[in-house]
Amino acid sequence: MVKEKSGKKKTETVKLREKPAEKPSVEKIERKEKKKRVKTIGLEINPPEKTCEDIRCPWHGKISIRDRAFKGVVKSVKAHATAVVEWGYHHYFPKYERYERRKSRVMAHNPPCIHAREGDEVMIAGCRSLSKTKHFVVVGILKK
Image 1 (tube, rainbow, N blue to C red):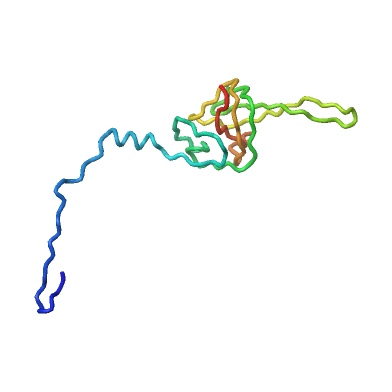
Image 2 (cartoon, helix red, strand yellow):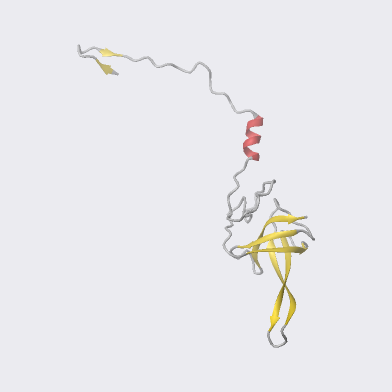
């Protein structure tokens, strides 16, 4: 309401929408669900194509990457949502001036969106403790 100088009230007309609000189609809703939020984890690796509802997934869940990252080969996936990852290195003995081959094996969480299998070369990264023996999570598959 706006008052004029003469004391009379001037009314304003408001245009109403001609069309009622359209309901989103089923296809638009499905597209929004498919384009689920993928967060950046700080490593130069592409996010997985699939989505998942796992809260322990570094891409779609609440787990944050905070430690070192390793490349290794998956040796076993027998336990539920767990992959045993192994990588080799050389240890030097100064007394004998020779190297010895050693290997490290760690248990890592295997999210359903990544689903690494035996023989895959994967990248794992450290995170908070997920269980008694799991302190790593599979971030991506490098080679199948």
